[in-house]
Amino acid sequence: MTALARPTDGRMLGGVCAALARRFGTSASTMRVIFLVSCLLPGPQFLLYLALWILLPSEKAARTHASAW
Image (cartoon, rainbow, N blue to C red; front, side):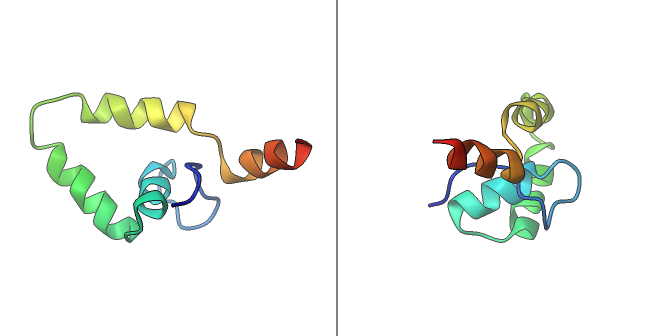
């Protein structure tokens, strides 16, 4: 598994689904479909997406922090 960071390539809106797809070894399209289907169920999916968008670092920023150590 790779580190959880929003990629700079292959993202549509915020890169959250692309980051989760990389982390779990699936395609970004599959993760987007799973997210859209989950939005039909009751729950805070949209708020979780927004929180991950804010909290997950961009891949570029994650690389910068990793090279600083």
